Image (cartoon, rainbow, N blue to C red; front, side):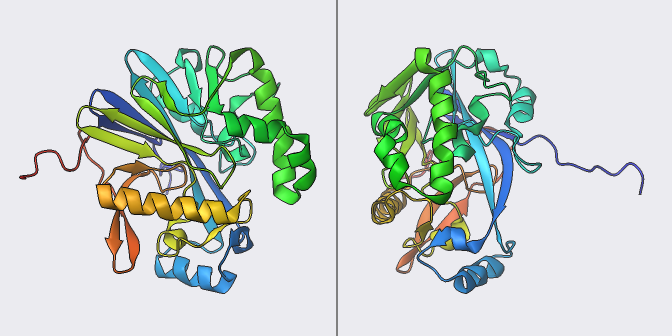
Length: 300
């Protein structure tokens, strides 16, 4: 029928964290074979996805997050860039959110895999965000700069070294590594090693409210939340990644900590609840207001 829409509305969703606003910006999705998962047979993973009414092979969402705090604007990760038709939506959704690239003063990187740093440069290799300082964990910077690490890597990981190094080189005059502490007003770095050596989450806190942007703790929530032993083939250290995932699952469930993830389904805000011996992901409901602390107003 003529006149029917052929695309979704803008992938933009705001959430208030005290006096700070965090905005989810969808970059699209990537489909990948189940062999990219580690620690589970493809047939078993397919069963979990079908039980959750999800596509097989896996379809993984890609999100970025904008943080507005103290009159400043940070972007957490920059998506894939326009490498295929299903990704590279960050620029359009940033515009829909009313933010120009030149307004962003800080880039907070969870890590430098392509689906997180590919949008840092345009097709000519020029920084997409011309005024922004690039901030990442010192261990992450060291990993991608390490020629020995490059020589030990193979397949998909080896291919990512060139992309990461190009992004680092283009920002060499505005590169600011950290090891922890506050990295932006109201935002504290939380080291989450394993997926990469410097993989980092960001705890956004203001007043009684907080939100942990946990990066790539999970890629396929329907599989990895009930089965936290399942990792990714590209994990630099799969044992460390699993240990980190279990530790963070335990922490956010016990603390009722609000979370956001790059590969949770848009708008990618959620909580994690214990369920029997495992966990259950509870996505936040869409809200007309900007939300806030889910426990605010509860009776003691």
